Length: 380
Picture 1 (cartoon, rainbow, N blue to C red):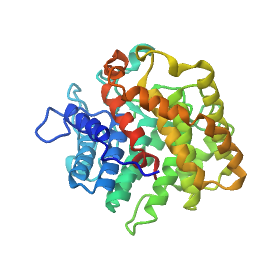
Picture 2 (picture 1 turned 90 degrees about the horizontal axis):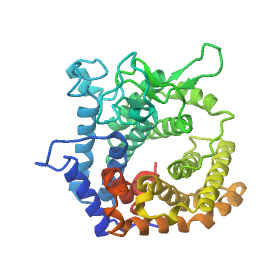
Picture 3 (picture 1 turned 135 degrees about the horizontal axis):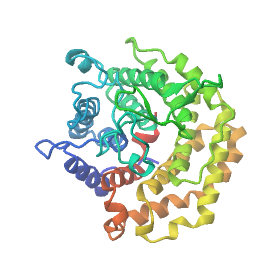
Picture 4 (picture 1 turned 90 degrees about the vertical axis):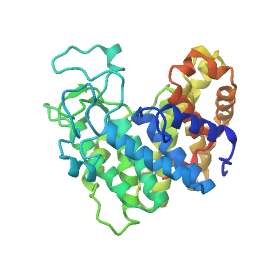
């Protein structure tokens, strides 16, 4: 169902985000964080698409520019300067994603040779593959909404860079793996384990960008080799998770797969089945644990809102699948009321005064806005 994004709450949340992070003209110094900005970009595009107000388009394009100019360059407290790709100023402006994009964490990255402190690593900068795929998706959406292929081409350049640096062949000769976190310059891994859903995110995002590129006459990079690589990495993997954010991601991925299939850009029905099965296991776990009955201080809003966004994607999935998958969708539908529970809880003003909300305010407000007006994010 089409969302009415003139609803004051969505506009209020995104106006607050723009002001708090320095996106609004004449505001404070910009602060960019890649995950949050990817969702925000999709939200501004959706506000523009539905309202026709030029100001939202301007905010979207200003956000793209700020992300590239800030997260595509070295930190202010780093002795290195310029584009993290190593390109000169002129070439860097033409190819702002060629070296990847920083996360935007408050602390600098761990120095080479410094021991890993797992707790501290969460607050250190670097590059995350799953943040990069979110930004790739958002850039693809900019090209769809503006009919300008430049943004999708930048996303494809980012996809090529990320794949080349995050994947590796183990010394044992086993199939390729993926690092979870890399250094700012992508020269060394900071966390060597693989993110559970990273190869799936990469496969679907690369397929999306390839499909979007077909709609433009301009020349774009080809991601066929990356897609084939990621298909191999995905083989035989388990996607099941008890994390609400991860479950929501699986539901969004299922929606993306269905859209790709409709566009003739994806044909792996068995992978869609596996993802739907994993999402069902996760939803059963959430229901058993009764996580949504806890007080606000004991909950993580953005993780719950990730699930809510996934359930929004599930709403749109029904009309895209064939009869073979109808039973799997039907098994998921009893969990749809969780979406209303999550949104209603975090729309309550007193719950947005809790420490759990205020500690990650920008992420929380942007993902609540996405849940309320999801089409900008869940659509390819």
